[in-house]
Amino acid sequence: MEQGVKELVDAGKMLPLMEEFYTIQGEGYHKGTAAYFIRVGGCDVGCHWCDVKESWNPNIHPPTSIDSIAENAASYAKTIVVTGGEPLMWNMNPLTNQLKDLGLDTHIETSGAYPLTGTWDWICLSPKKLKLPTHEIYGKADELKVIVYNKADFIFAEEQASKVGANCKLYLQPEWSKREKMIPLIVDYVMQNPKWVVSLQTHKYLNIP
Image (cartoon, rainbow, N blue to C red; front, side):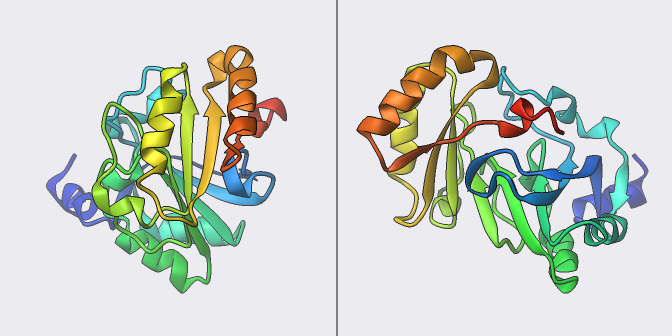
C-alpha cells in the first residue's frame, strides 16, 4: 500500500471496503427492516465458524474514499449498518461524521475488541471469547448478540450480559452450521430466562444477502 494511501486509511478517510449492498437486516433487534450495509475488511478475532472469512485480510480489499462510501449509502437508505470483519480496527469517526451530515442513522455490528470510535445510533455488540470486548463498550451497547455454538456459550452469554447496561437488548443466536442442534436448547433457555430473546439469521432462511 502506498504511504499516502496508508496514511488516509490510518486516519479513517479511506477504508478497506469489502462490499456494500442494500438489503433487509436479518438479525437482532432491527431484523426485517431495510438497511444499507457497509462491510469493512480486516479482522483478527479469528472465529472458526465465521461465515465471511474472506473479510479477514484487509490487504485484499481496495482502500476506498469515505466520500464515495457515504454518497453511495445515502442514495439507498436512511439506516446504514457498518459491519465487517471488525470495523473498529479502523477509525470510524470520519465515516460516521459524513453519514450523520447526510442525515443518516448509523448502526454498527462489532465484537467490541477494539476501542470504540464513531458516532452511532445503534451499537450491536457481539462478543467473542477469543478476543473480549474493551470495558468501555459494554455500557454503550444497545444490543448484545451472543452466538451459540455449544452449551458452554450460555455461560459466556450470562457473563457478558452482566456487563452491559440495564436497557441493552439481549439476544441468543445459533451458529448457522449448528442451528438444528442448538435452536431447541436456545428455545428452552429463553423460556427459562425470558430476559433473553431468540435471534435467527432470517436473511439466510429468506435467501437474501
